[in-house]
Length: 151
Image 1: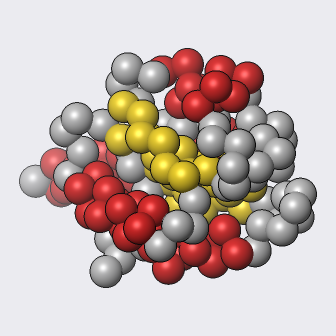
Image 2: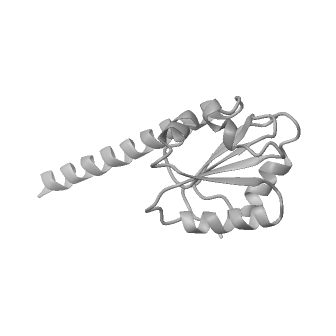
């Protein structure tokens, strides 16, 4: 009986460690995209009239509907253009931006610089703060990762 508990504890520790490593790798990949020019594969999709939020979603994503509502509010306020991409069909774009989870949003400036990469849900307010802090050229490049849903 003690052996089973020890084995179960070891397996649980291994699963948690694996999850933390995967999360760290996803964050590192996304950080590599932030603060750099947007990948050329995206250029034709950028509005050129202001900042653009690239929204990557998945067909079976539970929190993507909530993210879409936040993006609809953002677009209604005229803060940025929003480009919606299915990450399962747009693997080249997702890979170029270091996206490994949905929903994800990427803020790209008018001059085609990746300003911020958000892994997980972001509220309209959080996206607005990122857009407001953008300025002309990217100054503060951040990768944000959420593990909890926000209102």
